[in-house]
Image (cartoon, rainbow, N blue to C red):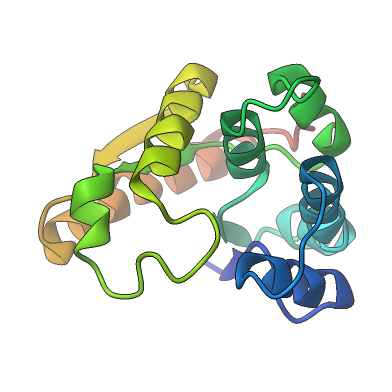
Amino acid sequence: MAAELLRFPDRTSATGKEIDAYLRKEVELSDEGVHQLFSRNRWEKAAEMRELLLGGTTLVVDRYAHSGVAFSAAKDVPGMDVEWCRAPDAGLPAPDALFLLQISPEAAATRGGFGEERYETSDFQKAVAEQFLSLRDDTWRVVEAARPIEAVHAEISELALAEVGRCQAGGVPLRDLW
């Protein structure tokens, strides 16, 4: 079984470098503009993702479109509701399953590097968690992430392998987001 890991933002592209500077608080951008940048970063990989998926490669994607919606909607900016936040990603390849690693902001803050980037504050992380839960549908698997890494890994591995098996067995069609 072929598999590939993708991470968003992809900080290697020109768009990703701009996002990286924003996240590290080196530049200021409007909330609407940065949301569009994150979406553009995902669209930069869309054709490659489709090609890999159609060729039978399993993609493991760290922080995809749902993350963009949750983070932007959590800002509570007038005009940036969930539907507005979803719109730029409509048509991207849809995931077959999502794994939400649930952890309290307090527990996350004890892990290395928390607070170094723009969105890493406890209050904002609580708002993001609420948005994630409001987006949840039957494709989501919620995993308690405040456990030892070995336990989290074992649970995700079991769930992911079951999902890969389901897709391989049933010829699950490639779908588009929203």
